[in-house]
Structure formats: C-alpha cells, structure tokens
Image (cartoon, rainbow over all chains, first blue to last red; front, side, top):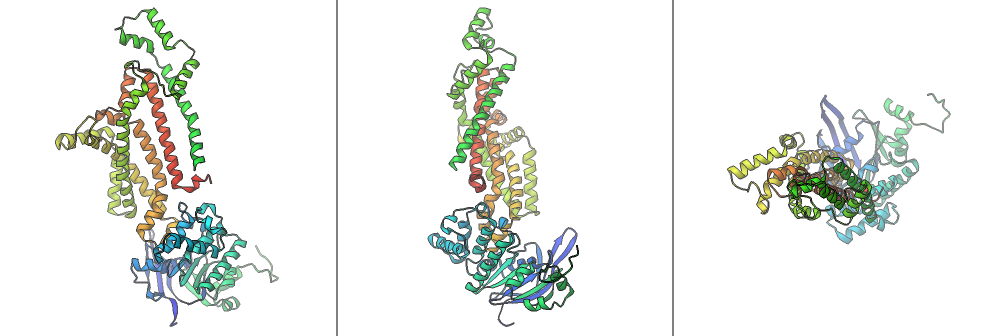
Length: 269
Length: 311
C-alpha cells in the first residue's frame, strides 16, 4: 500500500437533480499499483464510470467528496484547475466508450493528435507531426502520414478507437483509464483493440484501469478486479480468485449471467 | 471542394429560371398597361389609340407571352433588364447605382448582429441559469419582438434628435450608417444570441468535448478549437438567411432613415407601376439572395467536413 500509483479512500459522488439527491458512488476505496491492470465491473449505473470521471475531476456539476484521492504523487482531491489539466492527458490518459462521438467531427485526426504534444510537451510543427505519425503506426492505423489529414467520419469504428487510444497514450501517461473501450465495436475488432491496449501497457509500463461489463474482456486482460453494485464495491480480488470462488451473491449472479459453452447446462428462457 | 461548389452553382440555374418566370407572370397578371402608363406620364394623358397601338407594337407587348418571356430572360442573361418606364434609364444601372448603399447597410447590420449576438450567446451558455443568462435571454426576446421601424424611430429620437450624436437621415457619410445598421443588427442579434446559446450548450454536452477535457485542454482552447466551430454551424445558417433578408428587405430601414437604397427604389417603382423596374429589381434581388445562400453553403462546407466530402 506504500507504492500505490493511485489511492482512493471513501470516494462519494452525489448528483443533485430535480427530484433530490442521488448518490452515484458511495464510499469507494481502492488502490492501483504501478504496471497492473485493474478491472472495474458492474452493471449499467453501478457507478464505475462516474468513479473514474470523479478522479479525473471531470464531473463539473456533481458533489465529489473523499477522504483522500492520491495519484501520480499528488493530492488530486485538492488540486486546482491548472494542476488537474497538467495531469489529465499527461499523467492519466482516458479512452471512452463510443469512438463515433468521442472525436471532434470538424477537426482532422492530425490536429486532434498533435494538440496533445502542444499542450503537454510544448512540441509543435514537424516534431508533433512526427509524433502523431509514430503514434498512429503504434496503434496500427495504416498509411499514417496521409491519414493525418483525414476527418473522423472517414475512419471506421475500430480505426477511430485506435486514434482515441493513440491520443490517450500520446504523452506516455502513468495511468490509462479505458471506459468500456470495446463495447461499441464488433467482436473481431474488440480482440484487436484489447491486444493493442495490453501491448501499449507493457511497452510504456502503464497501469491500466479497465471499466467493463464484459467479463470475458476482464478475464483476458486484467490482474485484479473490483465488482461494483449501486455505487459500492461489493467484492475485490485477483481475477482468477474471483472467477473461481466468488464470495458475494451479486458476483455469483454476474458470473452466472455469462453464457458458458464448456458446461452441459439446461438453457432456460 | 471545387466539385461541391460547381454542383451548387449549377443548382442555382433552375431556381433563378423559376423566379424569373414567377415574377414575369405576376407582372403580366396585374391590371394596368405599361404602354398606357408610359404615354400618360410622357404626353400628359393625350393618348390617341393609334399612338398606343404603335407603342405597344414597339414595346413588344403584342407578342405572345412566351416570346415576351424569352426576351426578358435572354435579356436578363446578358445583363439587360430593360429600361425603366418612369426614368427611361436602364434598370440594371439604376439598381447598381443604389446597390452600394444597400450592401453597406446589410453588411454593417450583419456585423452588428454577429458582434452582439455571438458573444452574448456564448456568455449566456457559459453562465447557464445564472443572472447573466437571464439578462441575455430577456434582451434577445426584446430584440426579436421589437419592430425594426419602431427601434429605428426611437434611435433617431434619442441619438439623433436629443443627443445629436449621429445624423437622422441621409446616406453618404460613415456616421450616418451607425443608427440604421445598429437598429437592423439589434433586431437580428436576439435570434443569433438565442441560437448561439442553445447550440453552445448542446455542443458542451457532446462526447468530444469531454474527450477534450480529459486530454487536459484549457477551457479557453477547448471552446475556441473544439466548441466554437461545431456550435457555429447552425448560427451561420441563420446569419446567412438574415444577410439575404437584409439585402433584399431593407425597405423599412431605408425608408425610416431615408437612405437611397435598392429597397426604396423597389417601393417607389411599385407605387408608380414601373413594371420593368419592379421585374428587373425582383429578379436581381432574388439572384443576390440565392448567391448569399450559396456562400452560406460554402462556409457550411468549410466548417463541417462531412458536407464537404459528400459523406
């Protein structure tokens, strides 16, 4: 617990709506160690995305409280706007679920990639262009040099997600948060994207938080997992342990919901 | 991009043909005979039937409608819109000599609408729900509901008559442009501000804006580089329509401020039943209007690459 890269204690997120207050995240605490992959699983609305958006300071209108949020050697809970901006994208990269809407439709891919180098590393012109080409090659976008001039709508869904990944890892962050990165993609592309993510992770030595409701994805990529339900962490442990011996009824029902083809079971509608 | 522009220009041809046909038919369906009017004006009502028949023949009024339409369109295509009955001058020259004043007014009206409307809308969007938002929106309601002639008269009353800062009428010096363009612009700025506000609020909720924040962009850069261009797309449409309306419809403003523009020319031509002038001016203004729309479409394509590349 001494060398945790990200350490969260008692994080609570409240949304103030017209019908009163909703508690989206309720006293969540966990650590992320350097180089590991932590999966956060749970159904829609269980608070997994909101937890990470709160850590990134991207929930403008919500009430975020915590005993402590400590990440990348800094106290993120009390960090000011300027300090948080230097962490976002630079120390913590983030990939979102829907690559179709997460890229700006009116700017070229090149512009959206090079601005990472501009704002965080102070590079410009040829240097940032070269960086962008290297990144696209790294994530497997063919003919990277010419594609810099293209707009997001000229890319397929899988290619757009590759661009999103390239953008998120542009400044070699210590932590990469992937919020359901494969949910909007079809199965063959999912496998490619996961491969790219774990390849980049070992190459850059990043720690990764993979938010997912797909237990197949989690089993393939993560070291440890947290199971969230109604804003609380209901179970956590090594992925193998949780899969082999789930402690909580909710985790058991979650695992039972995954269709198995290696077991002879009666399918009930 | 060039292909897109060429395609749009080709699309204009049937539109203009249709406009010319409609204008022509309306002018010929209206009661009154240009030849009679011409003689009445020129020879003090001393019209003999022989003289009238001679003039009708001369003006080609006895030709079948199709032939007359062909003369009108083929003339218009070469820039000849005929001669005014009342002033006996080429219609095109009369319009062009007054166009400066109208374009000037419309341009500065548009500028006022843009300079007031866009920042107001952005400010309201940034402080959504706050008192600045409320003030901005009340102002925009006010702007949208005040008639332009009333605002024009009030401005003359306050700034020309009472304070004496600007001239009340006339149209040669620069400071005579301030009041008309401000009154034209203020009316339109309300709509621009409302649209800018709602468009910006919508864009702020888009996923790519969240991506921008997650990348560590400062709010200013995020707004300028990622937000504004997206949010401006609907606003440009309205600005273009407003500009077209200002060019073709500055009649009221020009009348209130006694500016010698195209709008006033058309009104006086209608009152004196100067058919060639009305016909020519309407066709001319329609051409201007569709050209402005073409320019809007080009700006649109520049803003949104999905349009530029035809998907």
